[in-house]
Length: 275
Ligand code: 1HA
Image (cartoon, rainbow, N blue to C red; front, side, top):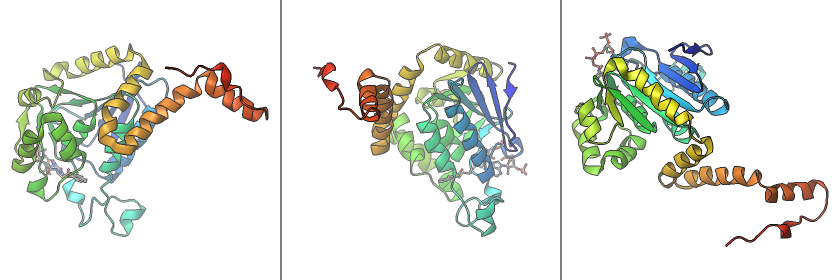
């Protein structure tokens, strides 16, 4: 595929093609483990995906075929989080900023597909989990390691996993820290499909193209609806925000605005009180 590179990043690659954004974690020497900088760059890229009306779907992936992402870079894990080289880190303060990225992916009003070759492990496993769909290569391996390395993600990592594969299986995954191959992941509903490694990108792009042929607003409202109950008031806020956007597009809402600006009483009588 003729991906067109966008922006200037050190830890990721951001590319686009015909309405598809491809965001690649680019630290293959550590199985695409992330550091704070990686996550800041991912957030910047996803912000662009959200804001660019020409982009309708995003792929999140890892560089190379050995790993999607192996979670937090344990070499720079301090005693309170992951320590980068930014201003905050100069004070010896660590971050857990993958949590911000998780929320951003969940809230992004466009579908996000995890394209997984090799390991999706630890915090990297949670990243595929928060994506809307996951397409796995036949060499993919999934698992959590938290209790082995002294960590846990009791938020989406635990709760969303239980909603995805069921409570018993989610507890097994977290309590035993085993690895699961692509077929096992497919059987437990953790991924949408499994394809030969050499077909991974072609298949993922095909799924993206099918999505791009569909109504953007319908997809947006569906994603918000799927997530709303689990997000509590923030989920209701997102859905209600979409309702507000649609309402703004109506004559009725525009009458309210126009009347205010014209300093006259709004003429809402012309609009039906619907059953
Ligand atoms: O739980 C959280 C959080 C929870 C709440 C809030 C925020 C959180 C943020 C992060 C996390 C976490 O991600 S905790 C979990 C951290 N990750 C892990 O425990 C996975 C560690 N890695 C592995 O288990 C394995 O490397 C692997 C199964 C992914 C791949 O195994 P493989 O193919 O045998 O390769 P391996 O030789 O182990 O790794 C290749 C190189 O990459 C090694 O470096 P080298 O010896 O060549 O110098 C290895 O050390 C490095 N590497 C791999 N993963 C990481 C890593 N280096 C740093 N951090 C890593 N995560």
